Image 1 (cartoon, rainbow, N blue to C red):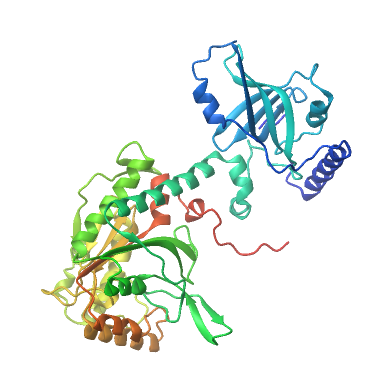
Image 2: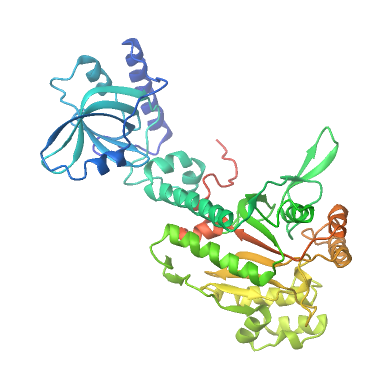
Length: 502
């Protein structure tokens, strides 16, 4: 954007002044019989297409090729003689011979502002300085911008304004556009990988009568006609497993939103996008392989190598990634072999000795997880599969045969963040009922994130769920890592924000 032609004050009064000036221009164009908001423009080429077609056109050469181009005006020079036109693929220079242009074209140019959309018909040439240019024969206003854009050099100074008015951020910030485009490529890549491996994409309810499938606090709403409370889903897990029971497919997946009524941070947004998949006759080792394969595939799509930069760190995604149990990692960091601790009391004493704060009467497995979270998690920069998570925090996973305190469950970490979570699904209805009862007891004791009893899910298991592996991947965090974005708000087009008080 040419700052000599357009500088915007941050003051509301300046914006109002600009608004009045632009409205006056709009009215003038209308009075001249010009349609300032036409329905359509028959564009022949996008910017990138012209640059590709005429890549070999030499400097100073005129063609006889007539084209029609359109886009947003991002620079105006010499009273409209030169205009930089931007579409979603790039930039193109448009030139008008203002001394010989017809009056109706000059009327448009005189009333043109940065941010307006125009369409131009003209002849392709390359200037002596090497700039691909369209020499206009016609210029049409396609949409009038009534509010000024921020200066591209100074940008939007307030970060929250960037998220609140994302449309402005996207207009002036190429990196924001690139991140959200990469997000689309990543999610499409995940979907295509699974379709290629025989998975069926499905949709399950967003409104749940019981908040289940994950340990989290839900959003609550109410259905007036049915007279019941419903919960925005915190996870689709229990419905997806019902589909496996029903035999719809032995491999199902869903990419969709989940909602958790919890804190907001650089890694947490109340509304987020996740992948969940389930495969019959598979276990958590198979899920580890799928997790690794998906992440490596989308890395190939968005980066030139398996080594990606995140801040000052280099993360190597080439596999195979190490697999270590949670207890093993805690032992390596603290010297404490948690598997030799056999009582809740002793577990609490160890936590206290390590300086790890506990909230209350946490069971053995929860203590292990808390120590891991404080002492180990943030150091897992390179991709690592953390296996054998405690039964106390894994109500839907199969127990390990050799140590029933642990489960056939894993979490994948990189950059100190949990990226994926999977396990061998618990398919014993009696064991599942016992686990739910323990969660109900925890809820009654004050844990508002604990599971509720889901009798219908227990019933579905009684019709027999085959051995099944399940996997969930937090796609927002994955996009963050692959695009070197340090806040989840950067990778969500419209993140959750507190309403602005005008």
